[in-house]
Every structure is written in structure tokens, then in C-alpha cells.
Length: 500
Ligand code: SF4
Image 1 (cartoon, rainbow, N blue to C red):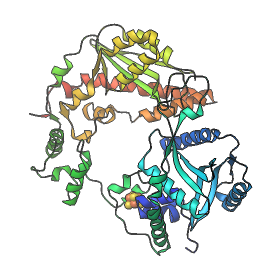
Image 2 (cartoon, protein in one colour; image 1 turned 120 degrees about the horizontal axis):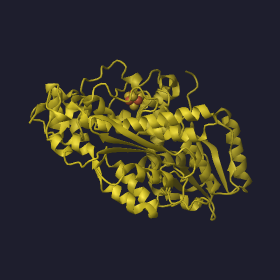
Image 3 (cartoon, rainbow, N blue to C red; image 1 turned 180 degrees about the vertical axis):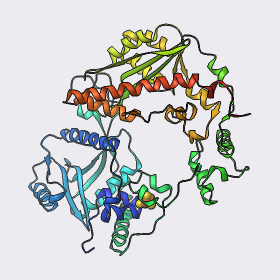
Image 4 (cartoon, rainbow, N blue to C red; image 1 turned 60 degrees about the vertical axis):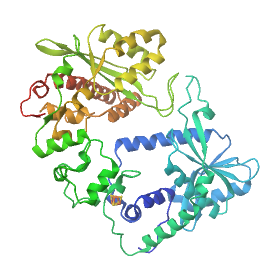
């Protein structure tokens, strides 16, 4: 280990989370878990948003040399800044005291000096972004650039796309963080010195995994750091809604397992039920689910939507990250027979909502309860009604028939295998043995949204069909799961349950 690696803004943020994470980033990168599809999609969204953000400033100069050509990027940045004719630089490179920064945007201010802008694909300004800006401000000023403003550019949730062209000034919101970033400069300087001293040491720092491994981001070295630690059987993190202060208190007392929590430890009612289920190793019934389900009117249907949420709106009337439904599944109960199934998948890249709403209204008829899992379907229906005023009456009538099964189960039943989660993905295999999502190529909502976007751009018709089939199978499983759950002996009788 002869040459000390340069710090960058992302490495500084890693080091601020955990010095060991920074050490691994610099010296043992292979230990990191590879990014999953969801993380890769976040990166792609970041690129799309970053490119649009640069288009806000016509005539800006892109420093295109990549990370393998840093000397060239530094030289090009120096030359363009000195030439004085480009209104802005994108991906400009600066180095100061061993910290190398590629700034998203540096822009000349009319009165002299520069504005530094960090582009984020979120819609909210987070505290962490200010630290990100502060690291860059420290580096750029140290490198001799007269930076007078530090900003973070996010997407603006108030922007409604008109369906014709994007107004880039309305799509983005510029947050000035100059004072807040300046207040962090001394700490950044001290942090850089400390991190560099740590990286110059002969061995990695000795840091045990803990809550910091997921704050602010899940650490990609977690599997490596915890490889010798046996996971708890039913860890305290399985307590529903556990507050951080209670978690810290339990940890301070050396309690990792739910079953070791003392009887007199102050727990919320649902947490007490979860503790009892784990201690007695059997499900607990704490309410009358049959009575709740009997309130439904016939015919009983089960509904699920799949949605995708483009960062940059694609359809008229939508905002950044609005959820756009592209698929629904409906199962309808029949006496002494498997439930009927209907679905609709919008297979072209135009706005799915008008055609989907028509098919939905048809599939759901005018009578009977429509069961869902959580309030998500209600929100999607309201969005559809707002987007399609001509069908708003019919969609509101559907909304009035919704029956949310999640609170019905949460308020009456707890199984140790819920492991603190009331996701249908965990509730289903616990209460309907043999039924799960494990056999499906697409097995969660995030993968479904990604799969849909991939299918729309897939050049290979077979790949497209495979993805569409996977989406339909997943959505159908969601509604069949609800139907099977309601018919299951676990909800119908008390066998094997502790009751109170
Ligand atoms: S898993 Fe935790 S302890 Fe290990 S490097 Fe990451 S943050 Fe640090």
C-alpha cells in the first residue's frame, strides 16, 4: 500500500457513515455486495435527471474524461475556467489536499464568482445533500475557484407535465444551501484529515456492525462484516414499530432476541402480542377476524394494481414520481369453485390510464366488496379519478366498495413468521402454507415496475413477452393470495392459535 487513494465526495460520505466502509471502498472493494437491479435503476434515473439538469444551461461545457483520465479532466477544467467563455461546466474536476471532486454543475454568476450545484433525482432536500455540497465547496474553494453559492437541484413535485414538452425551469427546484454548507467547512476539513490518517494506517479500523450500517444508506459490506455473527432467531427488530430509543435500550442491556425481553419492559400492545407469539412459538389470535370478514358484501372481489413512477413525468397531468397504474388483477369469489380471474396489462408506451380504467370499471361490476391489501389501491383509484374526470363517478363508486384486509389481519392475528412485517409477502406463507411468491420470476412491486419499463423498450419480442407474462403472473398471485388467505383455515378457525 504505497499510494494513498484519493478521497471523493462519495468516499467522504462513506467515511462519514463508517470509517471501515471507507477503508473497504478504497482497498477491498471486492467485498461489497454487487448492486441489485433496483440500485442500478436508481443510478440510471440519476443519469437521466442529470442530463436534463445540464440542458437548463445552454452552452455549458461537458468535461467528458472519465475516472480513468483524471489528469486530462483536471487540465480541461482549468483551461475552460480560464478561457472565461463557457457559462457553465458539467462534471468539472477539482483536486484539493487529496480530495478529488467531479462537480455536477459549476455555473458563472452574473456578478462574478461561481455557483456550485449538486443534482439529485429526489424531490426532497435531505440533510445529507448539504454535507455532499459542503465537501465539494471545501474542495473547489481550496482548488482556487471563487464559489459564492452552493445549491442542490431536485425535481419539483409541484410541476405538472403538460404532455407536450418539459419546461426545465419548472421541472427542477433549486435549493440554496450556501450558509448551511459553509457552516460545515471546518468539520469537512477535520474529517478529511482524519479519514486520510485512517487510510494511511497499516490495518483496517476495528468497527463492529450496528445501527450505523443502515444510516443513511444500507452498507454494501454488511454481509461481509456480519459473516461470523449468527443471526438472531427472532431478533428485536421484528417487533412491529419498535422505536429507536427502545431498540437502543434493549441493545444496551444485551438483548437481541424477542424471547429475552423481560415481561415488565414497556412494549406497545401489538409488540406485546408479537413477543407472546414468539415466546409461545405459535400464532396469537387477538380479535375476531371472522366477524370482520363477515361485513363484506357479495360478490367478494380481490383487486391489485401494479404501478411505475417515472422520475421525469411521461404523461399529461402527472408530476415527478407519480404512480401510474399499468396492470390490474381481479379475482372474484365463487361458491364451491376456484375464483374467476380477469386482468389488464397495458402493453404499449402511451398513457395506460384511460384503457386500464375502462377495463377496470367493466371487471369490477356494480356490486360487492372489493378487497385490497393496504390503502395503496385507494390512492391509485383516486389518482385515476383525478386524471380521468369523465370516469371519475364510476371510479369513486369503486372506491366506496373497497375493503382493506391488511388492518383486518393486523388487528386480529399475529404469527411468529410475520417477523414484524404485515407485507402480504410474509403474511401469505405464514397463514397459507405452501403458497408464496418464491416460484415467480417477478416477485415484488419494485421488480414489477422495473420489469414493465424494461419490457416497453425491449427490442426482442420474446424477452418482451417473457417480461409481460412475469408481470401478469405476479399481479395475479397477489389477488389469488388475498382470496386464499380469506378462505384459509388460519382465519376461519382457532386451530393451533393462542387466543385472548
Ligand atoms: S457493515 Fe457496518 S461496520 Fe461494516 S463497513 Fe459497513 S457500516 Fe461499517
